[in-house]
Length: 169
Image (cartoon, rainbow, N blue to C red; front, side, top):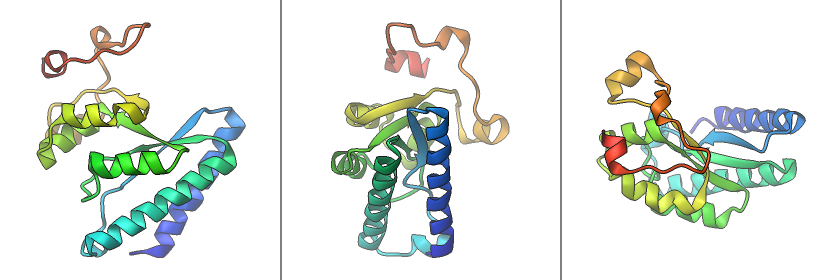
């Protein structure tokens, strides 16, 4: 694991939290767990888990110190990118919430073979924010990146309702 890069990431999160505080932001989003670089991917799962929990602890303490909640957004691939692990993190660290990214989750479900709706249902109690955008496939993402919602897909003022039929179209 590249400790220098890891510490740089924590310095960048700290700087972002300080700037967010100056702007009056309610939360900051960070990618967690992040895709693994090749040298880290070979580590045993128990060691990856310890690293990830230590990172969550540090993020939680940074959020507490700056008084800004951190929303963690996972994309993977990462062996800990599972509802079971993320729920454990959300229940352990009170200053962390989950950011559900509709496009990234759609791509991750295609890539990793999990049920998008089961993942969403499991994470719903821990949601802090939702990123909404469209994609059909990884090829779309590579070509177009984040495709904005069509006006007919905008959430209603009274709240967001998502159904399998609406998402699968």
